[in-house]
Image 1: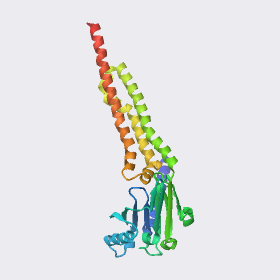
Image 2: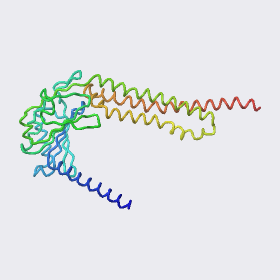
Image 3: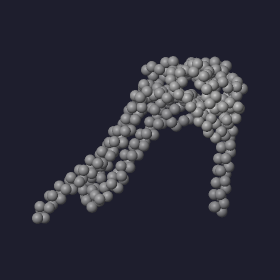
Image 4: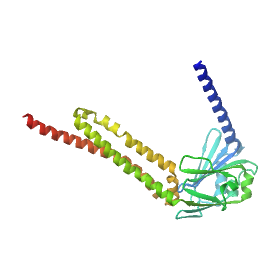
Length: 308
């Protein structure tokens, strides 16, 4: 009886998954998706165009057509496309995307005719704008919802603003003036938390290394298992490093640093704390191994004369 119930539950889950997959495929294949990624040093546009909407247009020709439209407003750094099962993705990295980027204030102007004017006015489109979680934005000095944008829940550094509707409705708005500002207080607070992971890891390493040293001095016969024991005691520091990486990915610091600092500096500030955490841990446990070996030899030297 229990087996039959389990089989029914599994079949029901498979049915739900199939229906969801079919609905998702139907949505993605019926409309064009355009992602505008406002993430600092690697600002780019991504066009996801279903294969059936290309008609007889070759992929290279489509890339050139979109690039020519975008280059009338922005300087294109690089461009490429990838062919997937049902969609072709065109990615364009933009060199001079912002009209203003200074001390946490950001201004971006997007003429919709240049961004999506190459598509038919009655075509369905999904325009998704991705920015840092630590930035506040308005469109044409109004709230996003006024222009049909919704903000779905996301778990990574970027927040998303999504518009779904016909191309014509966006073209009627002509230009989107996006004004953003970085929450400096929140960025500072989260930066302190991010860096404090190093202090937490050092304290944890010193404490656990001390426990390991005490254990080995009390039970010298376990010294031949030092590597295995060391890996066991390093488990918590490793989990702290993983938590540090997860925090920087989910907190918004990745994209906020890219918007606030110059390219290169943002990467340095993000990567350095993680590298320090990774370097500190083995150094502490290697030093502990040397101390245990030294003290073990000293104890043996003390015991030997007494025996003689």
